[in-house]
Image 1 (cartoon, one colour):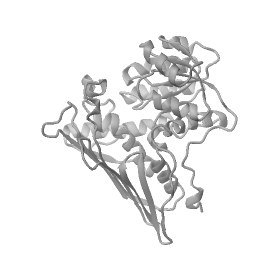
Image 2 (cartoon, helix red, strand yellow):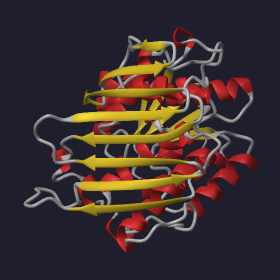
Image 3 (cartoon, rainbow, N blue to C red):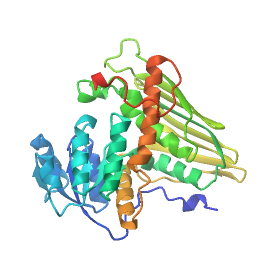
Image 4 (spheres, rainbow, N blue to C red):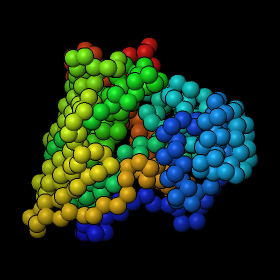
Length: 357
């Protein structure tokens, strides 16, 4: 049986494969992408953004020798580039992913993957048709505490997981005046997708049956999207809950509790990048010293898993097909919050509130 010390939670890179990577979309979050890639020794040779100043800024700070482009087709047309990291907004992302797959490039898509499940399925089929891999940047899986928790669950240390309860109290009003403020379900969808995804990882092989969710605006909140949200998820012989309080100005807290018949895991801290994790079993308590932070280290995890999968000729664990199941759960939750009725994942094909995306 795997011991606590043997659990691999840090990003893993391929043994030999080091392809040339092109980044399309150079918004603020890509600073973390590129920091992680550079620290991991990955080779980014092209930076593309319709706003050239963004691409030049990334070039100056991270990869001075990379070529800069304003047209994404110029990047995917380069024969020497094998992997494309697509980090644009969802609506603009689809034709780029489609073009890259047709050019037989492996693709890492930013999350949330797509705005509707049918489009996601079509892109997955296109990747299979062209014999390339399509993965999604669900970087939360490689946040040190989430990654270690995944390892504990996968190793069977907790036994059969019966419940998972995750709550986050933080300040998300930083989006005021930015493009993200236009997203009606900013918390349940754009932010919450990380939590819907990691919950599925904790119940691997036991897919969610239905979900009930709700949202609310706080009194006098300073941004448009509702800042309070919650979701209850039913599994066979198990349950999960998610709580989001996105207008927490004082005493922020992030907490994860997993309960199995052989043990309990609790991770908590004042923020997502500062966590103390403890596992309790019949043998006693163990608190690992976790190294690294969600931002930027986890971004090496998503890209590293894709590159390992290419090298090993297998599907990545963060494949688009797997990620689409998390998105189906997320869409169902958003729809439930609109109708006040429980929804079955997969029954809601398009993200509700699309008109405000």
